[in-house]
Image 1 (tube, rainbow, N blue to C red):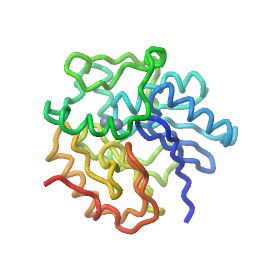
Image 2: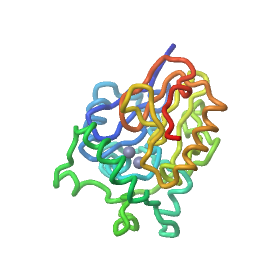
Image 3: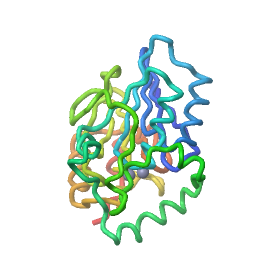
Length: 250
Ligand SMILES: [Zn+2]
Ligand SMILES: [Zn+2]
């Protein structure tokens, strides 16, 4: 099986590069510090000059999108895509959701300490976009300097990569999505499914836990996943019906 998804590790959240014949898709760039790892990878394995480059995010949370401006400065001609829901956050008509207080105390610190890899420096934070911060006093802050070229919704394919489809999976946030490659049965799961324990688990740091459960039930009913690439934790590769092993809090 050809698996053309590469994990750019070393950051707090996972970044994936999808290399295709005529396009390169960068999923979840992370912070500006993490963007440096992406640029090193691209230096080593440069796409064809005629290739299109798309910057895609699984959802609008700071640990996944902060370095987009910095990456655009270094990677000319790249285009940005988001879930349609993000448009509301950017024009101020909608506010990003905030998980309940208990989720902050119970579910975020363990994840943070387990990853324990990357504490951003002040210098780095200065270069980052201060957006997608799920805190009451910061959630309105949107300071992006770039244009979004593509607004995508459920069932849309990625521009330049028709085999990759967007599946809306609200719950962690309202704009959360997964990317699905039907032929190779690959799911890039963003923060909907994480993998800190080996078989994958449904994220407990959610704006709406019943909604993420519904999103997951729908995924499980319709997809036979052979590889899961989560937003945090290790990828699970080359299995069969992997969603049936994913842990779900009752
Ligand atoms: Zn998130
Ligand atoms: Zn995350």
